[in-house]
Image: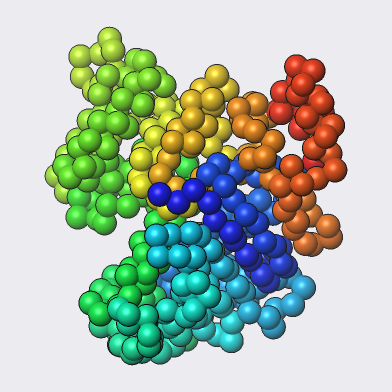
Length: 380
């Protein structure tokens, strides 16, 4: 279980250079276009590296992900965390028409791969030397990846490949962590979609493939499925049962609701109920880092306390972007990060490190709430 991470992002979109220490629960607030979503997109690039084979961002070209001020500098995304083996770090750089992925244990290199080469290096079991191996898969040449890099590249070491048996255990730990990064911005239309039964059992960014993932949990991780079902019943008492319904080669999520003889198809389920189902599923997915963009959408404010409680109980680090003062009412000042933009550059600072925090604390001591403090612009 990961309880905290340090993140460093350089030359990525509006993030020229930021370093943030995140705890178990972290809430990013700020005005529109301040750059909150760009923090989420940094994690999305890492997620795409694992699931699509290459670090890229849908809707962006290779050039456009670089910082607005200097497109000649490489993008750098680095995450550090503690483990049983020591301090681990994963670093991704994108520049010069290629990418590079590296991992470190206590500052020492334990993995290195350049995306335009099939060969990669990894630490031996005893950690005394770097060994070499080749990726057992072909070049990535398909559509959006090819368009992003304008060249043929090899997939990430962590994409559909087996690490060498003689690799240091910390290398496997890095793969587990990087493979556990998830970023979601749930869209009810996407959540209603049927899924192919033979699709990989993973939810996508807007919640596509939720039905296939829940079918996977129902068949292979029944305890987690039952936990999600229990959470949904607690949030929406009318719901009695989640029903993964097979229809030929596709699966849909139907809900058995009190007062109806037959389960309701997804088209008859409310947007809020679908989003609550997706959020509960995300919290029980077992992610190392879970990033949720504006989870309050379509959800009654009275239920946001329960959503935050689920985030606190999640297995890894949870990062939330929000505009909701109601959601802020249920978090602590030390869990809030203020996002602002000076010119074209995004700044991120923990509320407890700002000069406004003392005024906020006095406001809370006199019966105010954190949401009211933000809405009243005691901090911004």
